[in-house]
Structure formats: C-alpha cells, structure tokens
Length: 64
Image: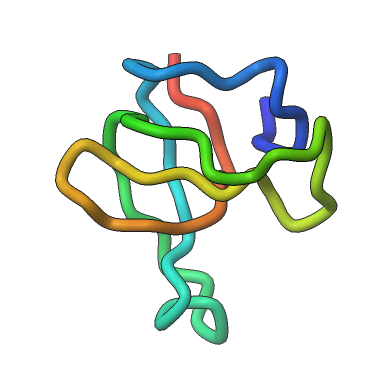
C-alpha cells in the first residue's frame, strides 16, 4: 500500500516516510503516525504526517 490516500492513514499506524532532507536520495524513515498534516483527501507525493518522535515527512509505504 502507498500513502497517497488520506483515508488509509490514521494515528498509530506504522509507516515509512521520506523526510524533506532525504527527498533527493529517497532514503526512508520508519515510524508511528502521530498526526496527519495534509488536509486534502489525496496527494501525488504522499500524505504529509508527523511521527511520534516529531519527524515530519511524506508517507511512501504503509507497513503491516
């Protein structure tokens, strides 16, 4: 699953995000969603979230 649909994301979900500083390299960071920051229903580059550790980035993968 990918993170372009806001409806598939919720607090407590384990995801992989790409941080702003890692956009060129595509390096992924794992964490637990704390807040959904994107207000629109979809976003082509991924919904922006804040992780429980405070890092902010766009969701690339949802981890089961």
